[in-house]
Length: 158
Image (cartoon, rainbow, N blue to C red):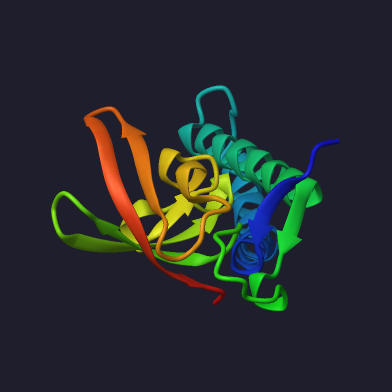
């Protein structure tokens, strides 16, 4: 079975969601189903069907999260000696040579990616272009709008 990289924060968020689903959502949905059953005929009971649909979604999400956590290789970037090279989990600041603007991203697992929050997937074009590079290196990112030239300003192990 292939392992997929995930940061400690990403794993903690998934565990928190799993705990919420199991300890709060699942009992609430079970109670809603029981209450809807008391209303009589289940064929025409919209509340019952809605609760069953919620239960199906909840159980599916629980299974999905458990699977992701089982297949995850959780990496603590702070435990890795800082080398100035870009690796999974590092936070990088890139200087766009063409627009004179800087952007900061943390390289995270696919499920943790959130571009507005500054987290990009390890399989994104930018992450693939910078992996293994060092501070001061210039890279070219192949984007749909064309090539984008960046210089790696900083590499931080946060």
